[in-house]
Image (cartoon, rainbow, N blue to C red; front, top):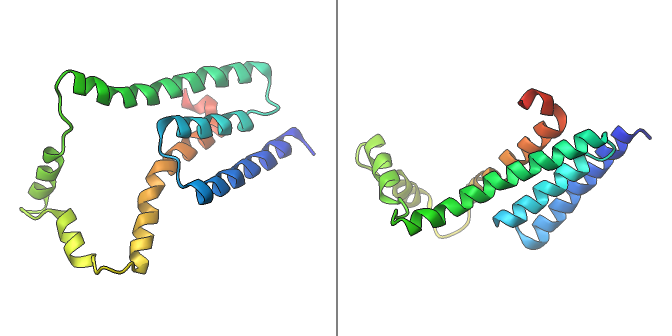
Length: 150
C-alpha cells in the first residue's frame, strides 16, 4: 500500500471518528474544538509528506488558528470599546428587502406547526452545514491544492 493510500485510509478513518463524535457529542461549535478537529485533519492529511511540507503545514495551521481566534476575540474587543452587538440593523435590512415584512417572523408564522416535520429536519441539517462544510472544504483544498492557494 502506498503512502498516499495510507493517508487516504487514515483520512476516511478520521472522518468516521468525527462522525462518531458528532453523533455522541453533537456538532463542535466552540472555536477551540473546531480548531482541534481542523488541526487533526491537517495532521492526518499531511502524513508521509516531506519535512518541508510538514513545516509549512504547521505555519499555515498557526496562521489559520490565529485568524479564527482573532475573529473570536474581536467580539470582546468590540464590547470593550462600547460597540454593541448589531441585531437591529440586519433585521431592518431584511425588512427593507421584503417590503416591511420580517422574513424570519413570516417563515415561523407559516411553517411552525408545533410538531417537527420532515422539512424542519431538512432545514436544520442545511443550517448546520455552515458550521463544518466551509472548514472541511478549506482543509480538503489545502491538503489537495495548497500550491494553488498562494
